[in-house]
Each structure stands twice: as structure tokens, then as C-alpha cells.
Image (cartoon, rainbow, N blue to C red; front, side, top):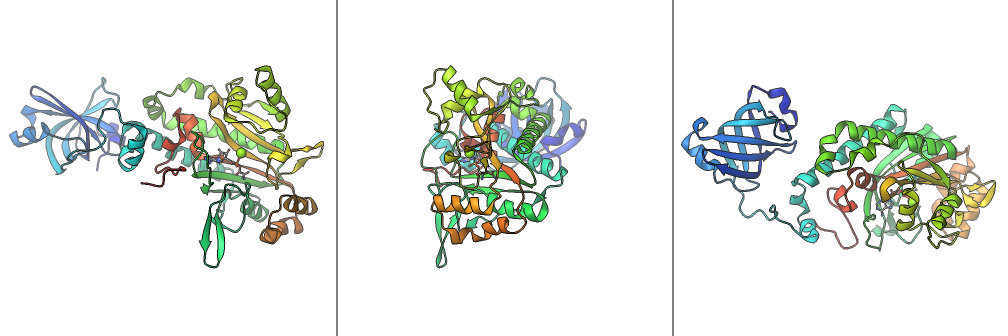
Length: 428
Ligand code: 4AD
Ligand code: MG
């Protein structure tokens, strides 16, 4: 079966397309149908002289989202966005839609979110989710080409990774399980088994604040590498992001154009990315007139001020260790600092990557667990990794939806996932 996405291979041929009416209009002896088939949208022209009377009549009364099959010849049409149109000689209505709730008029966001299952048929949402697919493909491609082993982490876990305040607890027979916040601890185990690994899956955080940057369920890809230290971790993050930007530009340019993304901003991304310490970032904030106390974490607006200095993503390293989870290795040159790094996207899109070097010393790690009053017994297996052949290792996590938000230039990450989960949204 022919598809709109590959229609250029069909020029001059008579093909059958199956899809839904996106829009339609009429002018004298012509009906115009915008047909979407999931792979794209094509203009179908129904000329009275080319079809039966019944078909012409039908084509004049098509409602939005009616399912149809059309047959006709594919011809070039330089004026259309696609560059091709279909000259219809037959049309069959498969299911007639009445009162489709999402019309071309403006709808409020809540209404659209309630109709997410239909909203994703709209051109913009469709484009964003196609970028998502391409991004996921590029993510796997990057790691697979570099001999990383994909070893996924469990979703039901007995412990926290990123602090205990954002845990989702659930009954697990006679125990309490928590939905994973990050696969990192498991990654550290698989890295000691395979060297270079990544896990890729949904992660969960009970984020109680409503922001444009927080979902309660989001996808994270996390590489972890044995023997790798912080500098190399930053290099890996840089190469990785560059790969993602390049692939999306190569393969999803029409979608970015439809979304009116300023593509030149993405094309300007190049190595090396600036690397600044937390201390330097604090210096930038103060230069820009922000009243910032050393030791505090950066808020969204601070991140925007810092990243606005650069066209590239900026890597900020060595935050105060007190801000970071128990597993971070401390800087031997200044133990107040963690050997961590965050990557801030340009244009104020905020943190897209968080990671760093892990504490590989058994005694220090145990001390941290105790200081944070984490249940030691639940982490016993994790401590084994420091008992048996412990080596330096590092990794990071990239938030898929935050990255899509940046790449597509949308204003809220809820549109970057097919069915977003937010503090006040569990449906559809
Ligand atoms: O910085 P985070 O919390 O790092 C970790 O979870 C590490 N254990 C990862 C690792 O080193 N293996 O989260 C990583 C990224 C963030 O930079 C952000 O892109 C995304 O995950 N993220 C969220 N995305 C959407 N909604 C949320 N609530 C998010 N929280 C984090
Ligand atoms: Mg972080």
C-alpha cells in the first residue's frame, strides 16, 4: 500500500491511499481534501470530470476525521508543502465522523489535554511525536554503534536513587516497592559486568510542583562506563548531544519547519561545549545581577541566565556535594564539591543531562548512606559493587522529554510524550 510518507516514489502511478480527512474545501467543479494517513498529509483533488457523480457528491460532504480510501494518480505539485498531490478517480467512505471535538478553532490546553488521544492527530502534535521517535532512534544508534550493551533496570525497586522526597510507593505483596527514579544503581552493576552499558526506560518522580519542565513519568536514557572519570563523562555527553541534534536535523527537518523551530540555532551547535564550574556559574549569575548564595541549587531562571551566555549547551560541573545524592564522588581537590556535571540546553530550555563520577570507595559510600539515613540493608547489593573489584566509573542520564522540548522549541514538555503524566493528570 502506498503511503504519503513515501509518495515521491509513486509519481505518475495510480495508487490507493487510506487515511482520514484532515480538512476539505470546494471550489466549483473541484473538491480539495487534505488526507492524513499517519505518515503525512497530502492534498487530494477531486475533479468532477474524473469521478462518478456519486463520488463527487460524497467528496463534497466529507467531515473532519472521516476515514476514507482514495485512488488516483500521484502528480508533482510544487506549490504544496509536500510537493505532490493526488488526482482522485475514486473515493470510498469507510467511517463517517460526526462532531469531531477538535476543530481548527482555538481550544484551551486543558481541553486538548483531555482529548490527548485525538489531539495527537493534529499536525503540530504529530510533528513533535515524530521528532520523539527520531530522537529515540538516534539515542540507541549512538550507544549501539559504540559497543554499549543495553541492559535495562527494573521499574519496581526497593530503594531511592535521587532522594526520598519524590518517591512513588506502591504495594508489592507484603512489601513496599518504589517506582524507579533512575536506573543508575543497576547500571553501575551492569557496567561492572559489561564495561559500557545503557538503560533506557520510563522513570518516575512524585514532583509536586507544576512547571513546564517536570513530568511525574518521563523517559530517561542512562549510559554508565567502567573506568571512566568525570572529564570523559563530559566528552561522552557532548558527543552524544551533538549526534542527537545532527540526526534530528537530518531526518526531521520538515517537522521542525512545521513547528517553526529556529533551525539555525540547532545548526549552530558544535564541539567543544563550554565547561564551567559551579563556582564560575555563580560568578556569571552575580555579574548578571542575580542575588545568589553559594551552596544553593540553580532554579530554572538561574539556568536561563547561565545558558544565555552561550549558543551551545553548557556543561556545569562540580556542584556543592551537599546538593547532590549520596552516590556522587567528592572532588579530591575540594571535598565540599561533587564530581558531577549537568548539561544546560541553550535558549533557556534548562537542564537536560545530569550525571557524574560515582563514589567507588566502600567506606566513604557507607558513610554517605548513613549520613543520609538511608536504609543500609536495602543497599547491601549496591555496596557489593565496592567490595568486589571496585573501579572508577561514571555516567549520566538524559531526559528524553526535556530534550525534545528543546529540539522542537515547544513551550511545555507535556507535548513531548504521547500520554503525559503530571501532578493533576492521569487521564487519558
Ligand atoms: O539529574 P537527574 O535527577 O539525574 C539522575 O537521575 C541520575 N541518576 C542519572 C545518571 O547519572 N544515570 O535526572 C536526569 C535527567 C535530568 O537532567 C532531566 O533531563 C530529566 O532527567 N528529568 C526530568 N524530566 C522530566 N520530568 C522530570 N520530573 C525530570 N526529572 C529529571
Ligand atoms: Mg539533575
